[in-house]
Image 1 (cartoon, rainbow, N blue to C red):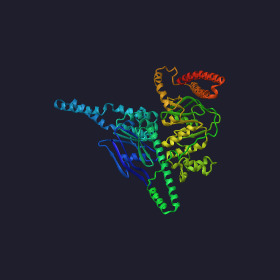
Image 2 (image 1 turned 30 degrees about the horizontal axis):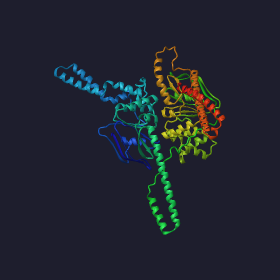
Image 3 (image 1 turned 60 degrees about the horizontal axis):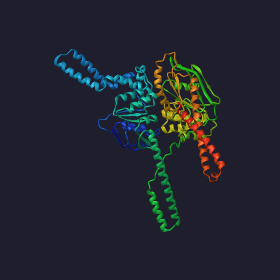
Image 4 (image 1 turned 45 degrees about the vertical axis):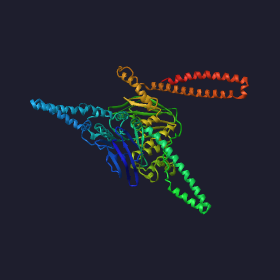
Length: 636
């Protein structure tokens, strides 16, 4: 066991954040702390690391074990370059290398017994250098920086000139290089793109120490975690397994708690009715019995009603009217900033009802694409055509659609003046803004709170084409699940940018990957994308050796994409029709069997002959349909 937490308590004014928390972390264990925003996850990490004192309780680390901690926001301020800043972690290795060089120089000038001593010293130094992996030190730093999304051309940038997200990545790189026995990470994926998150997953899975992670990235938690530590209304509970395992266990536990609560409520109500009845008899014995029952009832430890999951926040997205089948067509779209080309000659189309996720590395131009569609940024070339009756609803990750000087109430009432005060308050209450909260200024809200206000405005817009830029940023897991449910029930069309792989997996019917200045089309969710990308990877490698004048296997123009999508849609429709026809015939066959079993039919030879002929026709058609179904199912 590397860490033990016993009876940890923490209260801020009247908010009892952590209640009597006890859990432990084993060597090499990968644990995740989960809970809604404000539940106390970061507080618990700070208590464990000693950055915040607990009111009571004890945090114990195993003897001679080291730990490293990455907070959400890093104040890394250095005049070093990115590479040199990571190199500071290896100062002992650098000092050792310097000693080796110095010893080499001394050996050249020395003879006899002194040389023998220097040779022994040199052997010891080089042995230690090898043990500390000194020869691979710089390549290790390069690997970590590349894994975290830094290109070699960025290694010489000064740390002081970096953005907050880049500084956090530098701090994460330094922590990984230190290789402590226990790594503690608070929202490590917030500033990473998909490739960097995948790299970090692999790194942590193979890490030779223990890991504690606070994260809302459920896909990441499914890959990494072997234990979930949940904070729910201050109560800390441990669950074995990854996030999906925890979700199942939690639902079972909640169901059991609700049953226990309802059973107790029924028993309490029954006892109260008996007590009332005994008192109504108004006899000495009956009153004594009633008093005895009352005493027993007072001693019962009342169970609290389990909190309803997602009961406080409801999100329903309803289009005002239905758009045409062709929602949007993009042809020959290009955009560059200065000399940096984001994408060139891009063409694709979106049909009604599609849920399209745009993915790609940071800085490739995903958000720029959405801004071009919303006419916030002009394209360099190309055209965008919207279909008939298309009404766009836009969710901007910077929340430019919000007015910082307005209150929440004014933000909704000014945008939708036909709503009554009650309707506005009800809308905001659905997004957890109640009472005096509605008179807070937008500028005073956190990122997650602004996100909820933007979603409230989006819900009221009744648009039939939603364009969303990182809609799950700053949302906790419960809020993400609410949004997923709403989007899956939404009858309109959705185009969104996201790096939340779990969210993409749940909501996308198609993925556009922006890579090498072009969009590659995948018809399916994120798991499908990973599967197909792995299959296509060898093809891509071969394509690198194809002469430049030959078309690349992945550079399909939009007409070819249209044809591919049409073929896939036709196959899916044929498969659906085939399954429906099989089901109809099977039901008919069963009905004919039931009819044949009736006594009055058994003596009706004419009807029996008709039934037998119909069953023969059904069996023949079913045989053909099963063959067709197998063929359609196997077709890629």
